[in-house]
Length: 476
Image (tube, rainbow, N blue to C red; front, side, top):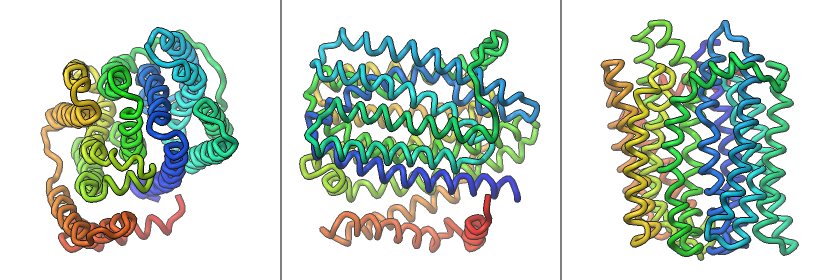
């Protein structure tokens, strides 16, 4: 089996698992928003966003560094993975423990502070799971990882449904979140035994090398946390929890959509790294171009199509009380499209070993976004948070693309991008012409018409369709 087909097959498996996980996640949001209401879901969003702020810092680039280090055929994978896992466990325990204490100093109501303390354990499990997924990505064997995520999300959905049925509230939901992420981590560790024996390890020399390679990524991620999660933190301090709930519900849709480019680039990054380090520049540019085409085919219809269905989609998912969140979703999905390209070029920066060149970009984005949050959110609320999010993601996509394209001295092909853009606009016209029919009918019609127009405009060929079909019929 060719490497390209293996990557495509692994991507298909993980995307399928992520699709199921996303569906379960959306169903969970639907249950929670309907039970907790705007203010209650705002409290949930505030507690989890506070911890996500620390979770981004905890990562410190270890997940990407692990993928890069074990991609070397000569690497001692069990030794590296065990030390990265132990390093992550130590750093996560410190940071998440500190986050629960720090929350006591914020002017939040007691229920949010208690929720942060409970959910900190959940985020500890999430951070360890992220390390484990890197092992599966390296071996292009993501079936178990996908199954573990589906199992965790199923446990979460079933748990909150049961708890809310008994009359429990926010704190019970956060406790169930802890249990569901523990299930996912346990399955990932158990499944990894066919590749390596994971153990707690402290190798000072290796820890020093891991930190040496990861600190540029970690510093960049530290800047990332300012513009990625600073919006909710500022919003929660100056606006009502009801508005936070509306913004959080729309942002959740963005979160579940934008995992796709991260999954894809997690699989492609080792291949790009091998091409670049091996001096195969032409092959590197070819693979980068194909990856650019792939993310463009997905990003453009999401950015365009959301304009026509945002309010009705939010009402359908979260309940009529959350229809007003549609105006935020329209803007956030523009930002979501930019995440596809920033994930592409950001992972490529790591594959090329150019992390240090990007520190200035992350720092500038963090400073600019924080200033904009502080200036505009108190006055304009979630609308300002949405637009600043779009600005920050656009800035980052442009900055990472600049570093990569300057180094390779080549531009990605524009043909597929332009044809996808044309197909997306034609799709938008179809959705508008359908009028006030059910939102799922419009979404389905949009997907079908986009595929048809894309084929008509030559954005996807018969040969590509045949290759995809052969990939689907061939076991990985």
